[in-house]
Image (cartoon, rainbow, N blue to C red; front, side, top):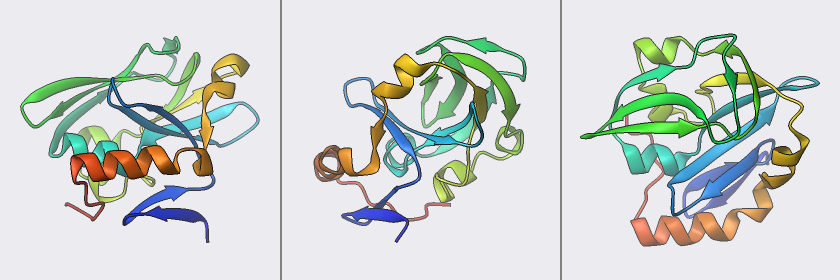
Length: 152
């Protein structure tokens, strides 16, 4: 199996994770090439901010710092920022999400937001493997009564 299931929510094994419960950061990072990484929402974050009405991504060529803003998301009655898990340069954006953000909720692992070229070894080391976030996922799923089902 290419994922770990926790109370109905999938944690993909081919990703690294940035989790910060206090700041509501539940991100995945996937290596796409030598120094290129795609970044997206976990099912937990998709559930917590549902519904997503709009998303504005940083354009290609934008230099981003760790924890700097990668996207602005209009969700429910809130406007949220999506911080970068790495320092680097945006090399590709998933522009289809700006036209229709529903895949963020329907397919959080398929709906990557941006791809970042990065050699940020320090912050890459802070990311966790799937097996290292199982208990955090379990705790948040129970506390927030999360159901990781397609919500489109």
